[in-house]
Each structure stands twice: as C-alpha cells, then as structure tokens.
Length: 251
Image 1 (cartoon, rainbow, N blue to C red):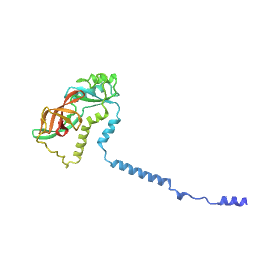
Image 2: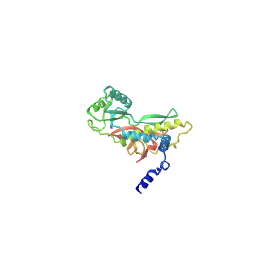
Image 3: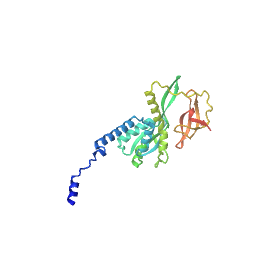
Image 4: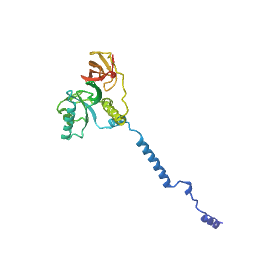
C-alpha cells in the first residue's frame, strides 16, 4: 500500500503556475511605461516662477541683513562688496548681495516706457552668516554706512520680509517673459486718473507692494505718470520712495 502511494506521488505531474502570474519582463515594461508617462506629465507641467523663487528663498543658507548706503550708490556698493568678497575669499560666509528693484511706467517727453528702479533707496540686502570676519568685510566696504539695527549685532530680516522686497523684480521678469513669448498680446490698460484726491503733505497708507501697511507722507504728485513721491519710514529712518496711485489710500 505504501509502495503504491509512493509511486503515485512520484509520477504526479508538476503544476505549471506560469500562466497564473505575469512574466517579470512584462511587469517591468508596464512599470517603465508608467514612469515614462509620469516624467512626460512632469515635463509638460508649466513651471511657476514665483513658486520656484519662494522655494529657493526658503531653502538657502544664511540670514538676510540690511546695510545702509548713500541714496543712489546702491549698485556701486553691490559691485564693491562683491569684489571684496572675492578678493578676501569670503564666499564661504557671504553668499549674495541684492539691490531690490521693480519696474515702473515713466512718462518722459510724452512717451510712456518701463524703467527699472530701486525699491529701497539707500539700502542693500546681504545674505550671509554673521561672524566677526563677515561683519568686517561688509562694514568696511566703501560707501557702506552701517548695518540696520544694532551696529555690531544687527538683526536679520524675516524671510517673509525678504520675499516682500524681492518679489517685485521676479514678477517683472515673469511679465517680461510672458510679453516676449506673446508679442501679439496687449498689456492690460488701467484707467487713468485725471485728478488725484490727495495733495503734497497728505498722510497715506500703502496698500500694495513692498511697503504695504506702512504710512507715507506725500511730497510730490505726478498725474501724468500716475505716481507720487513720498517719505516712508523704513528701518527707523524716512526714505524717499515712488508709489503708484493704486498703491496708496488716504487715511
């Protein structure tokens, strides 16, 4: 009886399970196709320049500090400081020097054109690790009059503040790129205000742009360009800035 059982077991055919599961190669091909479709979808998705700007800003090393300079000397200070960073081998602790700018419409000789202007006259932003050495490199740069805040222990800006100051330049670049890619598109026209409901000496609230929520005192009005010159208290001192009519409200 036992011999019969052993023979039956030995002669029993092996069960072929190959049809029950997909071949490994076939699974790999399918997975590869899915990956390819995912990569293609990622490539097709348009990049958001502002999102990229924020991601880069919030992932960088160092803190942002503000330095004083003479109004109109911002670009020269930037160039001088960058030269000192290179010549003094300070790249390991001073990473970036920025003069915040924005594009504004200017009317000159009856023609309206876009010009780039400094957002913070008299100030330059520096991204750095604050050490005695890095402080000295910055502080002793020609035309730099000091750090904002405590002279020897300056307080860094918050990243939200830095974003607010640097965003106008990024937005202008995005708009310029869009205009270049669509030459037939017409820029949006804003209603021109023929009469300004404020005058020199008025106190206004800034409602848009890098100075939003700050108070300003108007010193000059230009109805043609739809802009005003005003004094805004920035980092403890009054600074002359230019604002569009749409950026201010009477208080």
